[in-house]
Length: 148
Image (cartoon, rainbow, N blue to C red; front, side, top):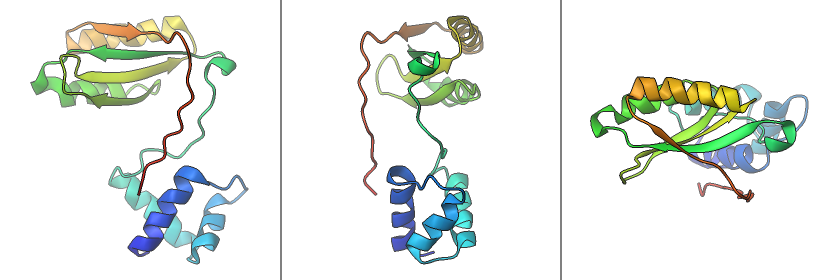
C-alpha cells in the first residue's frame, strides 16, 4: 500500500468508517486494494502507534458512566513511567503531557464514582503524588479530525 492509499485509509478510519458486517472489505473496495492489504497496514500502523484504537465514541453520561479529567504534577524523570501506569487502566481513555507544573493529564471514565476513586487511589499510590480532579460543569461536543 503506497502513501496515497495510506493517507486515504487513515482519513476513512477517522471520518467515514463503514458500519457494515465486513468494514475492512468495504474500505479495501474504496481504496481499490485487497482486504488483506488493508488489514496488514492497519496492524502495522497500530504497531507503530499511529493508530491507537478503532472504536465507537459514545455519550458516556447517557449510558450511566461517570467521567472526570485528572491532572497531576509528576517528577519529570518519572513522567513516562507514571503515564504508562495510568494508561494500563482500561478506564483511562487517553493521557498526555503538558509543559507546565501540572504535566500529566488524562480522562477517567468508569461505571461509578467508586471505581473512579479506586483508580485515583491506585495512581496516587504508584506515583507518590496527588491527583487533581476537574469535573465538568457543561459538556461540549468537539469533533477532532486530524489533518493527514
